Image 1 (cartoon, one colour):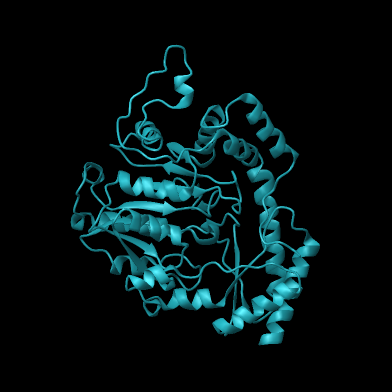
Image 2 (spheres, helix red, strand yellow):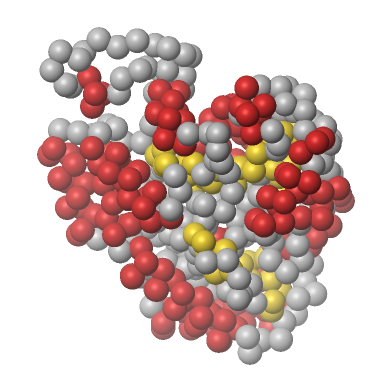
Length: 401
């Protein structure tokens, strides 16, 4: 069976994790802090906070901005549930909007239609690692600044809607010669096991707020917030005579550990010259082979202005119904090839249907999702296996269509 997306665990990873274990630092310590510094240097953001998940990062930043009951946060209907769940956790309302037909990403025109005086945040999602139209999205926050009603100190300080990018997929992607992480106010990366760069579980908040915000000071504040509101972490407390600490707020517990950061440090060192090169090669080979099939829509992953992080290869089948798509998936699996679907739209999930959301309001999302099949992409996938996947896909489509 060709798997879908196994993590890359080699001797370099094993050696670095072993070194972390032997160092005595298995929670937040020197490796986590070094990983944060290297992430900032890689993407260019002003400060980086590593946490135990991207989900935690998104929720912490919504709460930092003062998002609460009665507020609205605009998000794409085409995303994973985490994007919406964190809004619910804050007591606010997720305002789902439809996506583009060509690239799965949030429609700027639909965002604009749904901005109200209750809108506090826009949360675009870089689906499959392909960046959204950030210049246009950022421009909307300035265009409607006069409509923005500030209800917290940070909202007053910013003076407009916050753009909080769900960049879970897009670490290493480019938009107009800038890396994901510096494309808007705040971006949140995921380092989950299936991501291009993994720490097993983990994520990072990339801080890129404009003046008068001090991103380095905010980083220090968030370190406290994400460790129970404790004003000293374990590393600081090991300094001679520095054992006493205080709880200065009712914080959360979502810090990254040195064990997971150890994996991240190895992955980051070889990301551009190894990991991304291999993923680009796989994408190009899929495109070369599958472009011969007139029944498939090849995903957009590289243009003059944008370059994906090559996270997912989301193929769409032309003219197929959802049951037919599901049958194609079954037939592909019967040929010992694993595939997936990204995503089952959040407004169609039971919890969100119970809140009154209806998929008929998101026709492009429904159409894209009903025809989508994600193909395997991982470091150890060979050219021969890519061709096996393509043959399985073509054979399954021919049997159904």
